[in-house]
Amino acid sequence: MPVDTQSPILRVTGLNKSYGDRAALIDASFELWSGEVLAIVGESGSGKTTLLNALAARDTPDSGSVEFQMKDGSLTDIFKMTEAQRRLLARTDWGFVHQNSADGLRMEVSAGANVGERLMALGQRHYGQLRATACDWLARVEIDPARVDDLPRHFSGGMRQRLQIARNLVTQPRLVFMDEPTSGLDVSVQAKLLDLLRQLTQHLGLASIIVTHDLAVARLLAHRMIVMRRGRIVETGLTDQVLDDPQHPYTQLLVSSVLQP
Image: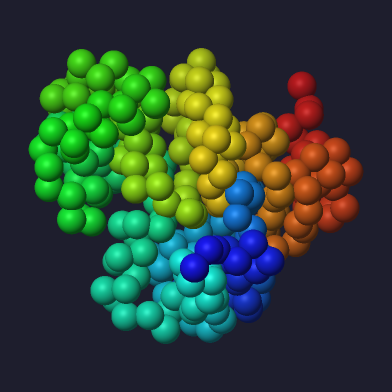
């Protein structure tokens, strides 16, 4: 059955999360549509990473729901699934690009094995096909396919991040989570990686959620953005509208701090 384009791919309702006396997430709600890139921005401690981890089922909220549109078109609360069902989603329909590439790669196996591993988890076993697909994806993320047998530790930081992207996208997921994917990279490397991400998300029609503290990254990649402060969503809207005409005082402060010389 085809995916229902009249329903969001993700519906988030009333998420709350506390750590002891500290409220890390307060009544977070929004929808994400297929092919849409959503940026979650805010300063350190705003709750954006807590929200991302809840959306990707890497942490369990205290209350609220995260409904994902399954391939039959139904919206299903991921926290009512079994652990095995969530693991299958993470290997197939979802991708997760970590800030630290070492967290998203197996550093002790080759670049080709990193890309092919997700395909093997889906039952593919033909060595020649796995290797050919790995080489194809290395080329797509601008890594020389001749390096298919090299270990990730021999790659630069930018190449590792591109390899992590190939590893995630090889199964053609419908939703990709990205946690500060360009943080810590040199400016020139950041620019090249952002251009690659923009091309891939547009070409593949991915729904993506990207956490970033960099408003320039949000403007380049995201159709819409969410601004968070102290665990709450304080503003949401089309990226250009939010950045060019911020309504909430906190968003105004964020934007003005970037514009200051």
